[in-house]
Image (cartoon, rainbow, N blue to C red; front, side):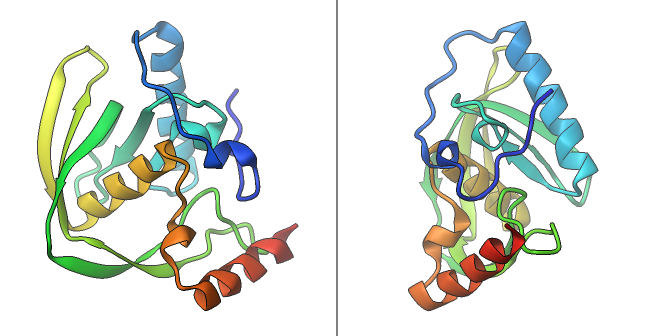
Length: 166
């Protein structure tokens, strides 16, 4: 059974290795991650958040409920248009055991390529909330958390809430 890793766990800061073979274990982990994401009302979950240092993630379109299982995802282009949207993370929890939120500036749209669970290559342009989710989750695969984008004072405010949880 997979367990959620929380802010402060060093695995969240590791750069993940590419997936060379789509094994039954990886497929099972992705299925379990979808379940965990859904149970915690999340819209994305990356492998390091459950203690796996491999490049795969799951995410859901909050409007349609469509689930994406991405292996070796890579953002190949980003729009110049930047937008500020509030972000939270299932690994960055406050004293109430709920995600802590903060405004983060990111490109409004991206083009992402990935391998699906059948081994087929996919490419898609994503905008709005889907672009936000895929950027947040692919950042996890590089050891980056959304709090890394915050100004020092705002980051310290968020981290105070995280520390109060412990």
